[in-house]
Picture 1 (cartoon, rainbow, N blue to C red):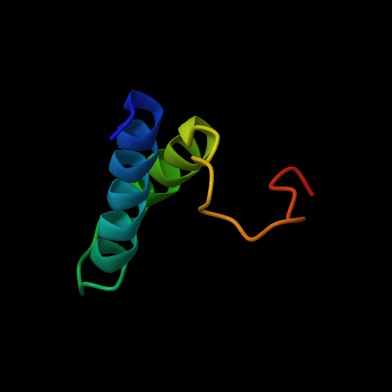
Picture 2 (tube, rainbow, N blue to C red; picture 1 turned 90 degrees about the horizontal axis):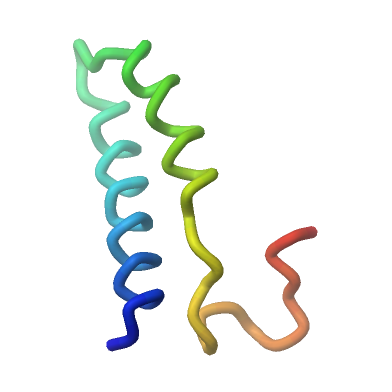
Length: 59
């Protein structure tokens, strides 16, 4: 797998894990509020084939 594909998959996995954590009773909401947007902003360009043709992730 390409390096950017690994970065995309790793960041997406962290976002999914953070989402799961957010639904656990007693989750640290300040942590979620701080880390969630940072992870989303650091999500690299999706590898080819992840999004359907014609979809622009910038929209």
